[in-house]
Image 1: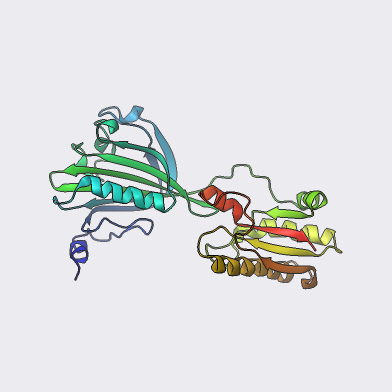
Image 2 (image 1 turned 135 degrees about the horizontal axis):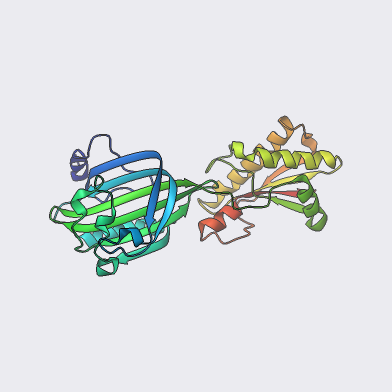
Length: 298
């Protein structure tokens, strides 16, 4: 049995690594808490001891997982922090705030609830902090709060993972009249509100409103024939995305035909993968824009 597996046997009962980020090799879980829905204050500034109330925070609501990992004294706290930071950035987390050692001030450990991590409160040696955000899909954002510090027991890494539902920011709603206007201007309409499960061609229930408006537009224009074109971001290789975009286009055609009564001979499904981006795939917001369905006049 590997050393990491042996140490993991020391994990507190009922605990587990979060699927978003794994533990540093050789560490074990000292504290674990999961709340299906809770409020969380994401630290976005230095925190002076006794001045936690005045510190800048971003209030979040959603699923909150809190994990405190303990590592042996032989491990370097800086190495642990950099390992986590690099993994988070590599996996698409954009930095919101970060600080190191004295720049974090002397109150970061004290800013955590006493029942969550009582053994880190009085330490500031080699402390570091990183807060980041990633857009997980069309409806969910994930925030990560990482705090590391060296204690008498060795380095400690505290990971808080918060999964929030995106708020409606007033996007233009898909309507039959808007689709008609787009067709008259450009011969096509871009539909961003047809959603699929990640990496699959399974339509989400949140697509119903957009699909109903597309069907309404087609019924109001009974002679019109269209291509239903699937687009993806560039996660995964080209062949995978080409097939996925084709399958999503076909799923959209099938839904319009079977559920909304649009004749199949008016619809042709085509997938182009990530060949026609409308934004950069280097950011999660850009990827979200590139995952779309377009209606194009035949």
